[in-house]
Length: 112
Length: 114
Image 1 (cartoon, chains in turn red, brown):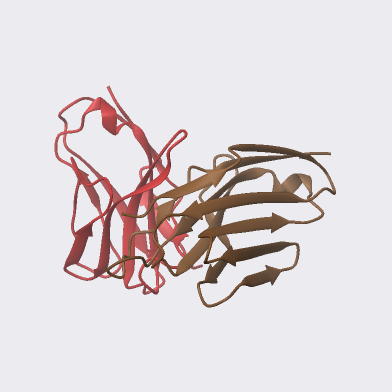
Image 2 (cartoon, rainbow over the protein chains, first blue to last red):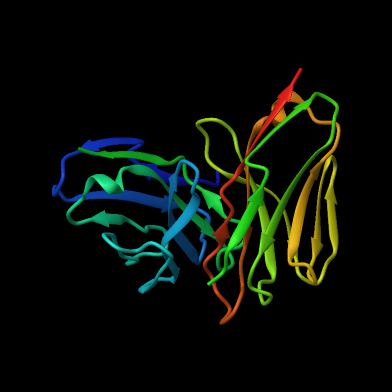
């Protein structure tokens, strides 16, 4: 089954404790990206990757890191999480640069 | 950068009525306009998209229209059903510099009353 898999689904952590949210896709997509969804603000792109070893900033990259060492994986790293990073995070992938996105199931992150 | 405004934020209709959601964008170079549906607690899913060289596209009960001159595009849902209840997001992409960053509207919560 074609899918984008994110883990974990729910995460509660404390300020400053490094965390990683994993994302994997099995559709051989070139493009992968991360979004955060906040009430009343829609979806905002954090980072995207056009291909392996190629990443670029989205609209809200501050406080986040990503890496793309393999085509199928695109982890999101929060080196020192803060409460304003409490949000619902989605990973998404596509064949062609941001078009026809397939989203993962989401990760609800709470930073205390 | 691109700015996308979406209206209304909430739309309540009776089953069988039509629903229209409108988005305006700021970058005249944007050339790709998708619509995503997000049911409660679920992931967003693409329901229809349109490119700037097309004025209208239909898929069963849903359609999207694009007015490049006025820089707005709309989602039309006919014969609404309770399962159409969800949050709908529009987006615009491909603007100045060939951007690969979709800019999303803030979403419209559609409620279809049986």
